[in-house]
Length: 184
Image (cartoon, rainbow, N blue to C red; front, side, top):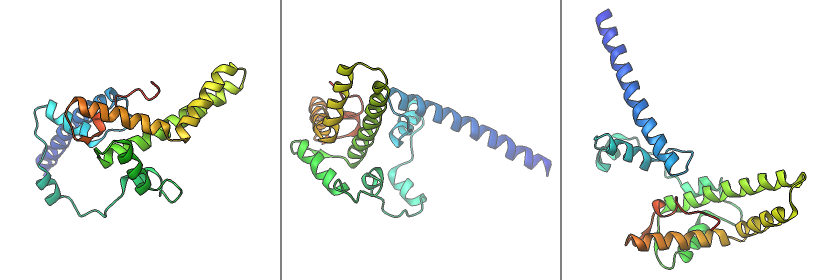
């Protein structure tokens, strides 16, 4: 009985070490993409780098329980019942993309980046109110206005389309968005 328990403990320790390695590698890849969240693409790249092939899509579908259909863009908008609904954002992103197809994950990433930048600018403005340079404060107001008028998103989509053109892609993917400097 204790031999069986020891085998289970050893197997658990090996599994934990393996998962720690995979997640550490995926976290490094996410950090290289300047993201705080490990995405499925980071896990796939980590497994590929370790020489392990990821299970096929067919195997994943067969083994995973049926999930209710979720709208990632709606989730990013926390319901999306205001003026910017998921459908409106999809339409805008596709119109900004000059006819290119835009992956839903790309739109979700743009929304999350948008929220990050709004929060960052708001934080900088609050800090600038207390004895900061007025010219710097005005620049932050201009950045915030660009964000709220969605000029920022249009510029990001144009740059992402250019990145997609460079690699010959007809679809704008997350990889075309993540390395763009949002304020250049």
